[in-house]
Length: 367
Ligand SMILES: [Zn+2]
Ligand SMILES: [Zn+2]
Image (tube, rainbow, N blue to C red; front, side, top):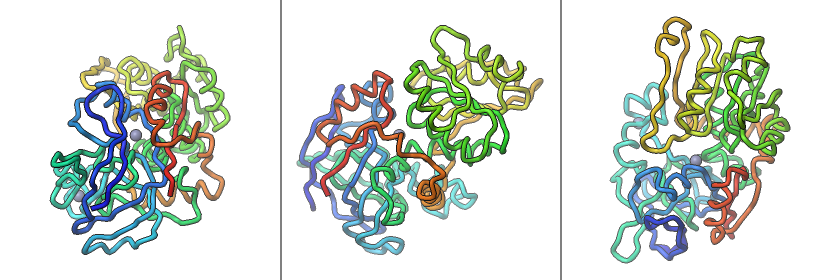
């Protein structure tokens, strides 16, 4: 059993660096040495108490690394493979997997993303330590099901690859897979964090027409423009639907994406739709949030309200193709990383994230 240093959440408002024992990989599992891990708003939801979760828990669900050891029966990976971790391992045999909805795998949902025996893989003395999304990327190493580690080309930078484990797939694939935006469509993206900016990149990738970005900070709106937004709205003190209509000849947009996870912005994004439009909730919503919409508009104006988990991705298909587009210069992921930090700086990264200013902080491990 290897020992690792990991950032552990013990129920408070910060993480502690602790030494833990990591189980050897079991049947169908691999041990991965982490190279990079992104600090995501979903981690912050847990630290701020906005999501009830079990503790102690190693946080972090976005990351990349190198396979160090394969358990018995592993067929798809070898030692030395570079991988992006996926919090939706899949069984490949349940009704959801069989219809291609890997992120909804029934076995993964039942075993808390561990598959197999569903047992915890980390220990502090005799106490089991949980792992966010079954991954716990804020640790030097992790053990995951082989379908939770997706092989990528070894020439790719592992810090950029880490982002594909959450923000990039969630944002880009919500546009490509969940909403299936057609070329030329008008697109609204509310919230310009890592996920929202990735949705903008997705809209650029599918040759959307107008791409309208909304945020409260001009610095983030400037970055949105750099990545391909054609119009921006600073939502401070204005009505988002009114401003969107001014930019769209009074119509509203064909596709809207909410990438924050707030009730008021979800309602505003929905109200910004043209007739026949689709609004997709991509942001992760704190426990207890409720929204109010007029259902008559859904029937009379044929508006659709839907949600997207992990961009409705098929990780073994989508992770390599996203990184292929990056390598070909078609997906401009480099500006998404604001800072590269060490594991010990994770609490500082949370404080920065809470201000709303930063895009991604990425923890880089010594490998
Ligand atoms: Zn995330
Ligand atoms: Zn399944």
